[in-house]
Length: 126
Image (cartoon, rainbow, N blue to C red; front, side, top):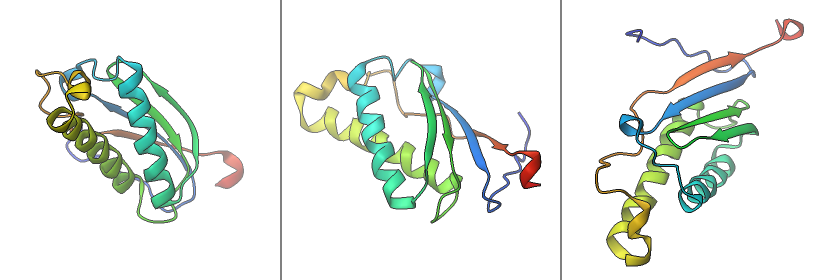
């Protein structure tokens, strides 16, 4: 993995983002977990003002294709998404026994610290 990832923000391009679950555990392998993640994604989308062009949720990772946010940047969007999802998962485990199965005991975190961001651009915009 490169030591310093270069992020290209502010040009109005779309961003293809990939993030993996902690230790590549299948933390997104149930409909309830995926639905909770999508709920948090919608809240983050509204807060930061960006367009979700597409997404794919796999059992152990997530792909997002988003437009440039009106507030913040894709890094702040991903931080809010990861923290919001993990917070809800942890709160559910502690406060509601019906949600205890949402968060496996072997998982300490939701995701890896880093994410991969590729700028999607076209020749007509350059």
